[in-house]
Length: 405
Image (cartoon, rainbow, N blue to C red; front, side, top):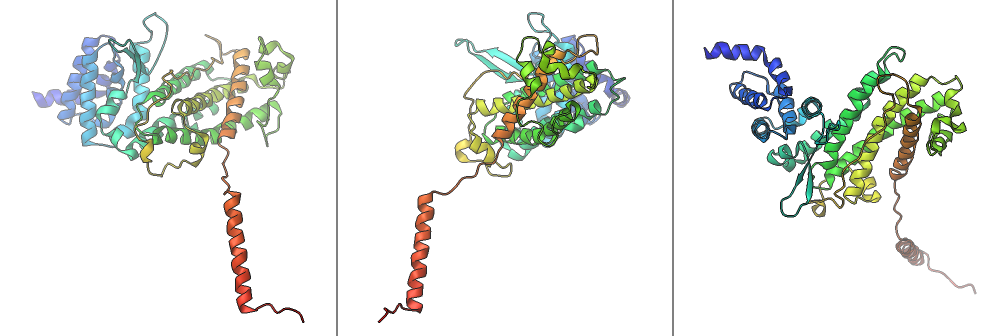
């Protein structure tokens, strides 16, 4: 009976979603086909289904499955336009887990989890880089509606906000598994940053919006990390990143941990586990800062344009149809702070991460400084001169000058 079978499948919907991670491509295809039937009959929740359909956009070796999942996504997007925006963060997490379980290694057998697809154009031999979600972007109505685009970007950037990583800072440093948190958080954020770096933007306001919100997050969370570093190391917490410190100097050396500049870390007064936690949080900000710089350079965005941008402003006509100036790949990689199979800190990596974070934060602070545009002195002087002449003429009319006898 159709009603009984539908009820059974509805009760086991969670298991159906879990089966999308099965390595057998034939099972995945028939599973997506079954999910499509259940969606059309209203037997499963589309809000729960969309993240798994987004994840299947990374099924690059089975184009039939990817195409069928795209068709279902477009259909749901037409019926519920806000759903893709609301579920994009969950979709990125599902896509990350899909890549990690189904395609954990590249063609050379090296471990990799990537959100990018590289295709070679026949005849020209040119390699084109796309994200896993480019097809969804092009086929759906997202690219035509600014409000939905910005909502989608904000959901992705929200992965970098403190609420997502607060479980790292609030854990007991004596008992937590540090390596697990690094594996779970940093690769996911790198995965999300690859998507933001290579989405097919059609207006300069899109990368500007991402740069704007990235700057806001770094100004809040990044500066808080700087203050916590300063408090831990005994530095000035009022102005914690005004200039290069000794650990930054140590990072430039071949063996940073053995240098005299790094001696402060090993004098017994520093909580090494807390320093490691802060380095992990700093790594998250490093990825975001690198993304900001990549977008600025790829689209040739000036500092003046960044400083005067407001998310509420209308798109400028000459900024539509934007294209990249540089087709290089985004590299947001960060060093592993903790050694494999241990919770011991790799001090060389930690010192370099600390130094990189401070340098990028200083550069970002300089870039985000407000620019005050002064009027031309000639015009201002001309106006003042006209005003003085008008005042003198008025005084002459009211009280004419009389020559002394």
